[in-house]
Each structure stands twice: as structure tokens, then as C-alpha cells.
Image (tube, rainbow, N blue to C red; front, side, top):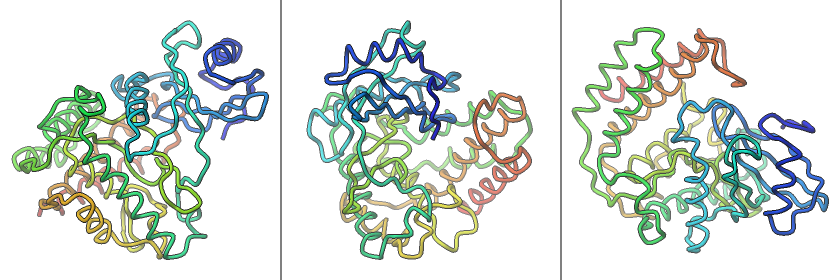
Length: 346
């Protein structure tokens, strides 16, 4: 966490004036602490003169994907979920600023939700088997609630195109890699062709797909149940089954040789296995989760594309403040992900 008196991305004087004028009960002076950066939206802990904490979110200084940093879209999604009292808990939204003169970008202020964010095994060390089971079931139940919600019923039916979600994802990430390519990756193209030729028929009604749903994008309460879902920047209308399997890719097990998160909290031995997560989701939704191998292959391939983008930025000296491994290690990770995708399709 950065404890800067004037953190990057914030014009302290102007933002303070705006917050005091637009956020009910907020009192200057304010302390801004940058608590999340990298390639995602910048997140600040905002503490006022009375010690009340809130959260401020704005885009990164150099946004690679404009659609992934549309602050009003994120605001709109969480506002709709909260206003309609859905079973998907989100922080209370407080104020949205579309005046670029305040700090150069649109931003919003929302409630700070106190609780546990599971980021790694150390964070889960105090959890016994019962707590791990409760956390898993709540995480899955919350995603199931999102996936069985009718977007149109809460005013989000126009959030994205209906149908063809995986095809769009395949095309999007292939374009991303090609537009920033710094090396040849024949296997990436070969896997893309196989995936594109074998996309499963979507059997579920299009739903809200969070796009990055996992423990460290949720806040758990003292009972280890989800109190808030965070980071909605990638949310769209999509295939709920594909969104679930993408989340499952983050559910690493202790003996996994490679995973999306090297120190995932689910590597702790007391967490349920992936098969239990799948069974819980089916129990909650009734969805058919056939074509598991396709979705796992697609997940490895998509993650390879994402990490290849990191590698390309490193090679071009455009990584900004992103903390990464050395370029050769990043390149090797991409190749291992592609090998995993190929193995899943074998």
C-alpha cells in the first residue's frame, strides 16, 4: 500500500474539494492511499477527517484497453446490482465524477467494505476445513446468483451482445496478440484455430459474466461468506458456463505444477478440490458443464494471450509501474500455458 500525501493519478486539492461537495457526510482534509495499481483501474483508500474510509476508483494513467477502463460502465453495473437488492453483494455507490478537469479522468467513490480478501496461502493459514468449505460455497453461490440473474430485469440487458461470447473472446484476444506481437508463436495460432472450430453450443441464457471472478476480487466477512464482489471492469453479457470455467482456472490445487496464481489461497490443503467446486456450481445452477476440456484449453490459451501482452510491453519498455518477472521468465510462462492448452485439447 502506498501512503503518498499526493499519490499518482490524484490532484489532491481538486479531488478533495469535489468529494466534500458530492459525497454525503465526507469531511476534509482527506488522506489518499493508493492500494491497487498495475494494469487494472487504480484504487485508493480515501480517509476523511472523521476517520471514515471510502474507496475511490479511476483508470490507470495509460489504459491499454479503453473498454476495460470505462468507469461509468463499472459504476452502472454495481449501482444496478445494489439498487435492485440482488443476491450479488456490492459496495454502496456514493458519487460519480465525469468532470475531467478535476483529476484528468472520470472516477467514482464507493463504500469501503471491511473484511478479508484472500490473496495467498498465508492469508488462508488461519482457516480450518469448515471455514474453507463455507468460503468456497459462498463464493460459488454468489457467482451462481449472478449467472442466474436476468440482466434485463435490472436494466443491464444492453451491456453486451447476446450469444457468441467465446467466439468474440477468441477473436478479441487473437487481435490483441497480433497488434502488439514482438515474436512468432505458431502454437498460439494453431490452438486458436482448433478452439474456433470446436466452440460448444451455448446451452444457457446469456448472463452477466464478471470476467475476473475469484477470491481476491471479493471481500469475505468474519463468517467467511462473501460480503462484496469487487473489480467489475471486465463484466459483460456472456456465457455463464464459460465465465465459471474461467474462474475455475484460478482454483489451484496443492499439487498443480502450474497455475494462474502461483500462491493461490486455494493451494492451502484444507480447501475443497476443483471437482467439489464444480459440483457446488451445478447444484446451485442446474447448468450442464459438459465440454470441460474445451473450456480449460480456452482458459490456458486466453491466459497465454494476456501474459504475452505483458511480455510485449516489457520488450517495448512500456510496462509502466507493473511489477513482473524478467522478460525471459514471462516468455517461458506463456509457452507453458500454451503447452497446457494443447494438452487439454489432446
